[in-house]
Length: 59
Image 1 (cartoon, rainbow, N blue to C red):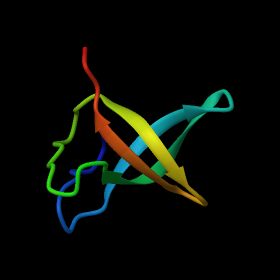
Image 2: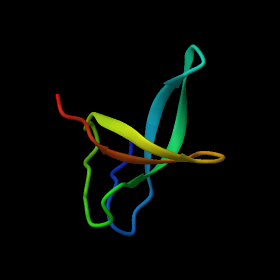
Image 3: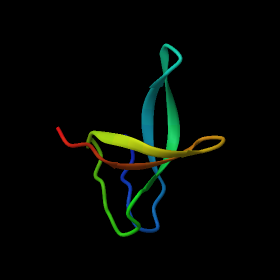
Image 4: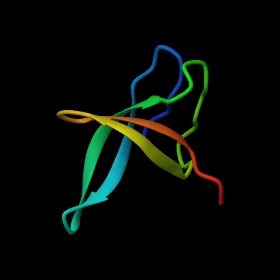
């Protein structure tokens, strides 16, 4: 997580892909959830070209 995700906010996540790391816009899977910067997340869904829907990872 490099940008806070929450209701009305578009966050940003860095995703390891194709041997590198790429930035994607991120929205919470649950519409009212807030996810702060630094949280480990799981990508639940992908919407081309650069948007992902995420949830907190269980670590």
